[in-house]
Amino acid sequence: TALVDLYATIPGTAELGANAQGILVIPRIRRAGFWFSGAYGEGALIIGPAKVDYYSMSAAGFGFTFGAAEYNQALFFMNSDALRDFRVSDGWSLGARGQVVVSDQGAAAGITSTQINRPIQEVVFGQRGLIADASFVGAKYNRIVR
Image (cartoon, rainbow, N blue to C red; front, side, top):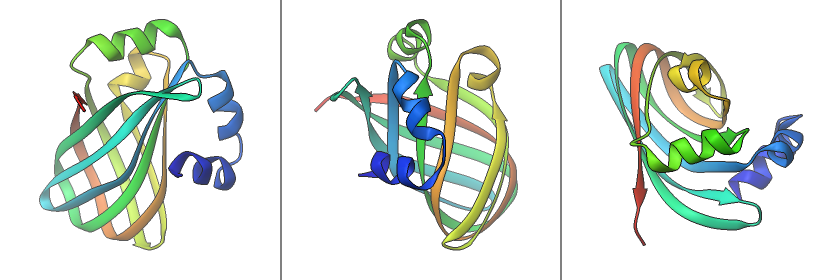
């Protein structure tokens, strides 16, 4: 459902998805903080038409963070090497981010080590809540055995 919403609301993402080797979709990530912040969400890795694995995402940050928000995230793995590396690694991602969300309107921007080192595109969408955030963030993706 989150992937259908992404394709319907953000132009160009359907083409991005068509060219990706795999997509990790994590709907309803919850983030809250007051100087220190934390976030958590669970989602599915989709390769072709099939859900092949489930992952959790945990993040911690420090900086100017006040409030709470919920958002969706999609990671597009643009080649087979990036997808393979993600699936066999612990999946750490370090970065700096900025986010402002008021009610259901929001904007997010940032840079992470996954964008610098690998052909992985991140799209954040569907923000809801009330948060102001400019912080350094570390995230860890773990495979969930179901």
